[in-house]
Image (tube, rainbow, N blue to C red; front, top):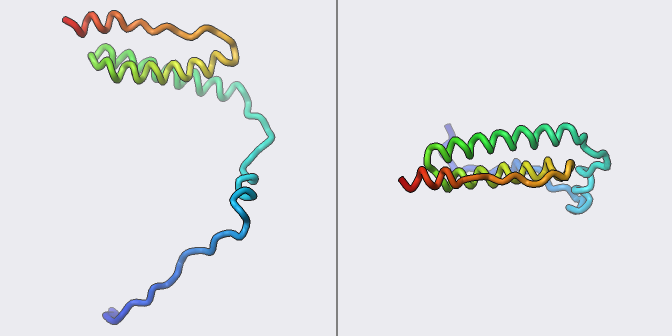
Length: 101
């Protein structure tokens, strides 16, 4: 065991000499992503957030339910932008009536 003064070793690697703009170009791709995969992920996320919203509404947490409904609406819009369907209308009136009792 060494009890004397410690020498600090530089273990950091030197930064690249290339400017940031050049480095960001290496991550871009001209290849379009397949639409079916993004649609499936959006559908799955929409269903998940809708289920979470309904569960929170039944539990009486209106704020959390609205938050999840907004997330679900985001994914619904991303799905419908491909199909041009009208946005869903979430009915929370029944939840408020239960909450008031």
